[in-house]
Amino acid sequence: MAVAADDQVLEIGCGRGAAVSLVASRLTTGRIVAIDRAATMVRLATERNLNHINAGRAEIRCAGFEAADLPARRFTKIFAVNVSLFWLGDATQPIDRMRSLLAPGGQLYVFGERPTAAHATANLTATKLLLEARGFTTARSSAIRGQGQVLTCVSGTPIE
Image 1 (cartoon, rainbow, N blue to C red):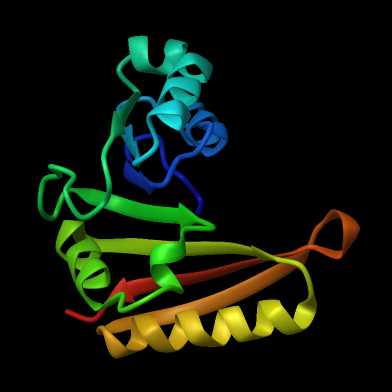
Image 2 (image 1 turned 90 degrees about the horizontal axis):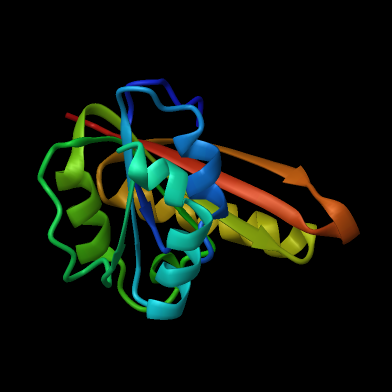
């Protein structure tokens, strides 16, 4: 994602906060807001990132994406890792909301980890088509990880 020191970042579905740690360590004047609907995950992510929270580089909230109180056109980067809202049900409203939260020139990153290359290809194609249907230009990439897992990413920039 090439996180810059002043980026305003939103993570949807932060889990235990591993990505929060990675992003916040690159920020100086920027900030990451991370949300997760599971209170246990928020507690674990908060414990893991207490130094970043105390330094003002991170904020972790217990909220589902649909109900989270987030400022419009604020985030330079929004990302999600293995978040089902992109693959289950109708993602039209969540994608439109993400678009409204992105600052001009901001980017959306949808990461997925899949067990095989065939699953990864299907995931990349479906996510790319979904974002393009909602007015994003896209790029996609994938990398093989341990035990044959394939990490995929589709990035999207809203067409203004």
